[in-house]
Length: 158
Image (cartoon, rainbow, N blue to C red):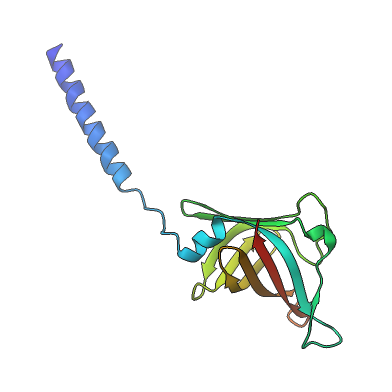
């Protein structure tokens, strides 16, 4: 009986050391940058979508529909995973002006771009303004390289 208890004690000690060593080798989460934190601690409400006017490209034209006014952009961080959801809220819209999507995201470049790798499409947004209350981004919205439109979206902290 003493031999069995001694073997069990040695086995238990070895298992504890193994478990401690195994969990210590887990890869640490990547640090969250200030931009990532600013994006992810808020739910962003779409306030405007603009593009250059067709008749005068030096002026902007709002292309936002009334039903887009309750739509939301949510950036999430869970460990090393970065997920986003651009959702059509209660007032349903057609999504030809602005595509609703979800997927993964990353802040890229010199911390001035957001790469959205969505289920429907991939977009790279240039961050024009980001503070506690406003997010303003710009991107080339195109299906083909010959027909692309520079769009700017403004969002506010919900």
